[in-house]
Length: 235
Image 1: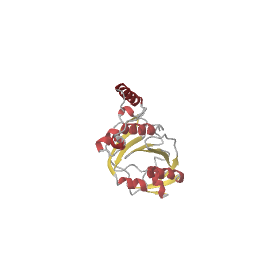
Image 2: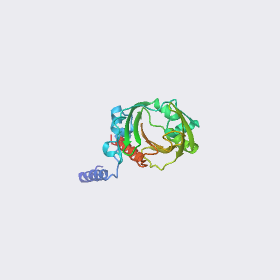
Image 3: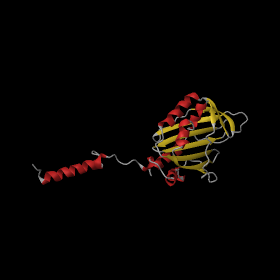
């Protein structure tokens, strides 16, 4: 038994109105889920570069360091720590090293503070999602590394860890701050804040170093991390 044409037209109109109002989600062919956002997938180097903070997104008092931007140098995998698990404080432990094998693109941008200090923002893309283990290990290290030593190509340095309050940004987020306690070092009393945030296959890594005579802005890392995740989401 059919339906009057007026009823069919009325039903079609109702469905259209419900779709516009968001009451019914449109189905995709074959029951497939909608495609993942571009910024959560594996990205090219050009796409990764587009995610870096723009000049209009910078915190007050922070500007681009043209002398350092574009430098792709990174910490050596030969670095160790005592206790060893404290490498996870800077996302450079076992999970971090394993993730490097899956990296397909990496771009870094450097900044400098008007009153001293330096900041770098690195965005890396991988052929797999950034694993939760990277953040789980970092969180566990915070409870084990109140004080620790870092041994790298520059020698041995001593650090004291300070936990910081940091909002959820991206899929997973981590941040901590360490203070230099190395005797005889001109950086003694200075701080380094680290933040990592993931979005699908991509990792945002922010490092802010502020010496004892620099003006440390505790909100700068959050601002730069959020700007970069927002830029990934906008791709």
